[in-house]
Image (cartoon, rainbow, N blue to C red; front, side, top):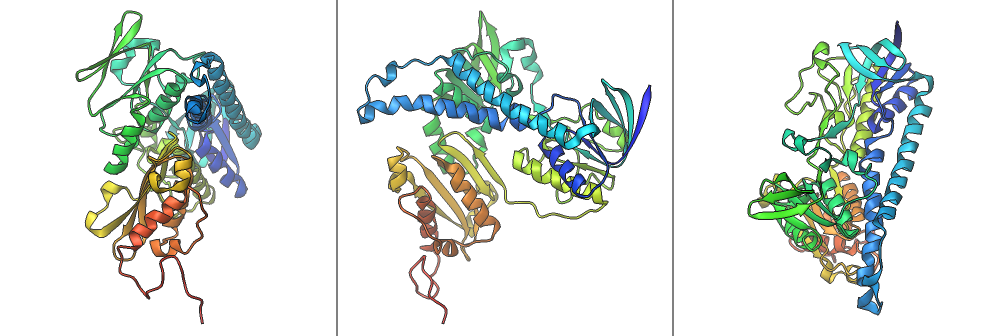
Length: 473
């Protein structure tokens, strides 16, 4: 039996983007249905940002024992780790985050949650197949927030369960002694380091010459040197994997390694398969991406909007939240309001963190910018934290000193990255920021040092000391 439902807005996907879209639809007091094929719980909570950070935290605490001897600690290296129990702790935290996210979806949608698979019949007509049977949903507008799935190339398929993606990694009861990581983007680097710090031998391979997509060559060199001490890095060449007895043979160029398991961290693709977007008049891009306007999140001129990983544009949780809010706002109100997108901000929580803020180094004209640098070796707080290899590079307009972007590899660099993102979005200049207070000793003084480096190469105006301003008369 087929039932028919009418709603002002239909939201497909109950992840971060879908829930933020729902918030805006509810604020507009419009009717809705929230459709999700399951399992409930955001990508961030189930397989992304939260479980990976839990693993990194546990690994960092365990790895700290190796520093005991430097200040008089004895037999730190003799301590033992029950890796299975450590991994169970990570999984327990993951389950808590997932349950919370799923609960928010059920609470927010209530009786308007439909669990099942949706596909388009027309731009604003959906067919949903699920435990409740077949339903037809007719909506004034549709928000597509179906998330993404890990890329798993066909050449890895014959290896079966010996290759896992991040979707399966946290389902493992424990982790083996040797793991190969294919793909050293943010998640591949983070999980490679977490596993290595838990005592796993890790070999990381990427066709890219740098990890974590670092565009600044100086920062990239520092990151490679730092992380190469913990995991074996195979960069700049393709890698292959083959069954070798009870394990796997990993190869890249002249390099060879035997591992027990391979983590494929080769990126994610939008979950657009099965939506039958062709029936809605939408032609997808080569990676399954939906064409849309990033200022409105609208798909062409259709009563359709896309948000989050489903857009294939900015696959980050905070961007998914913004996109969901934009899509939900416009879908619920029948508007095409154009929103200013926030400054780009990307962080790998690799401790030392790798971060890129604002305009990338490779997108800037070297002749139009000044680069201010700061080293952990000359920052008191970094030296106390045994983080003398911290590095910060800030890019500023050569004429005005206005901040354009930054890149860093730094202990707790997540905090520096946020400060710089806020400053760049507000249009701050190096001279203006130097007028703000900087405490001592803090890692943030690296920002002060980099700004002083910039200001020192811009012609002085007024002759006042850098960082000070005169009282108004």
